Image 1 (cartoon, rainbow, N blue to C red):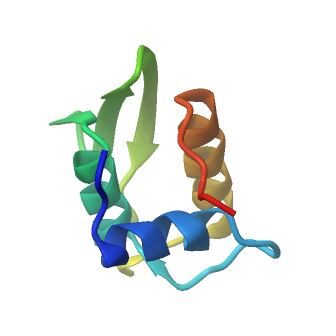
Image 2: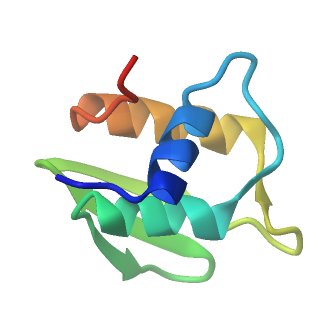
Length: 88
């Protein structure tokens, strides 16, 4: 799978330590799409994501656009379970 430089940067950012608080949720959703995930709308601000036989439900942040640290940890765990981590 070939990711754009923007998607690779987002993937690296998701896995950075300490966890960042300035990652835009739209970048995370675009990364899911670039990785081939099925993304569907749930009720309210919920977003269902299915990637490599792994399912997760996330809450879109509002009113801010940045993903909070707890949600970013969940995204990190989801991507790792699905087999996607940044290249060293």
